[in-house]
Image 1 (cartoon, rainbow, N blue to C red):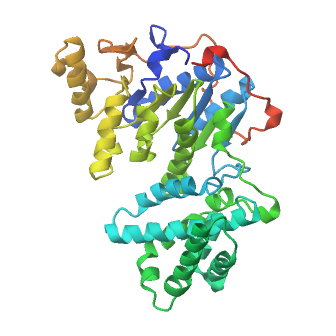
Image 2 (tube, rainbow, N blue to C red; image 1 turned 30 degrees about the horizontal axis):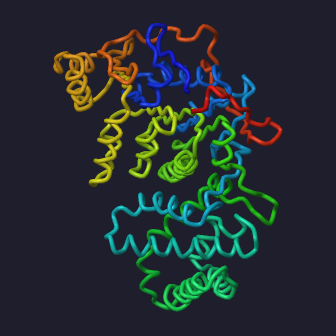
Image 3 (cartoon, one colour; image 1 turned 180 degrees about the horizontal axis):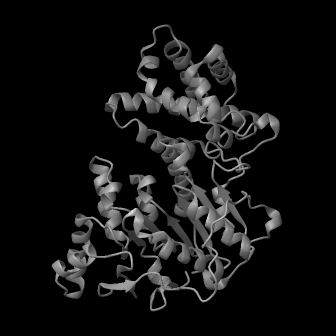
Length: 445
């Protein structure tokens, strides 16, 4: 099971209760990650070397600190931050065709939310056809990632110098694994040639938003390099989340928002969806793992809910930090449901200075019912928190404990912390030289 985690010398969450999830809530200036999240990560890396650890953030500070901690204790790790020189290649189009498209559709739909349902469906259909063209060209040659890159998706969509048409024509002439697939290939190629690439094409005109997004993606220099390994130069995707999760590697992924801007959500959410895949489909027995997502509002999507709601069953101890639950709600019924579901399922709550009035009352009403305290008193305590303390309601053997406040800034660890001065890490990819994963019976159900 997960290890016991110390929040302060007198405050801790037991291993089984950690799989009920935790949320750190408070304003950016509340120092919630410095006081609580980073020491939690350090304890997880140091205390149980066979437990998988994954850290996602928006600005690179927690991930670089985590990578440094893993390096100092000799644990294999991967640091995926597009801003860093030598960042490992990560091609999200490598893998199962259906999974590749579904993850890509989820992320792209975030940028097409203002379109009407019919136009959104047309854009998604175009994306699906482009992915099938490139993935099946790869399959025909027995490779993965030669044709399937974002640069080639953009080529199919933009058709510069008739290069897109050439790829589609090659696709339409190749053999297929079944009659049904062959017929689908013929239909897709015909649609591109006769409708999409036609003069004054209506489908081409109505999918400008998708082409604009793909154009921005391959124009951003960091993402163009990291997301598009050149197969002809011997470059391959080095980040395989299935293997990293299976081998209990320390996974550090930064969405690099200060550099990538609006594209940081594209990169960060796509990486988190790739991490979600092996976590959801893994069979028994399951090894305990921990996940941290700093500034969760930058990654939130309805499709991630099952990663947290099934965490107890999958032995995943998930901890997120955010400024306000309202930031998770990006509009629409699905996002409202996402906010409410996550707020209800992340049972360990640590609330810091600057929490919103709505969030204060959310927890006051829930916790007041649980331990017979007056909700008004709890809300006033939360709203009155300063930088020297934080409120908490933790689980103990599956039951919520009485709401209380703890002094912040106390030393949690007996030894020196490695997080006092995060260094820019040289990215490193876990490989066979790092050692084979061991089997620890205590980690298995």
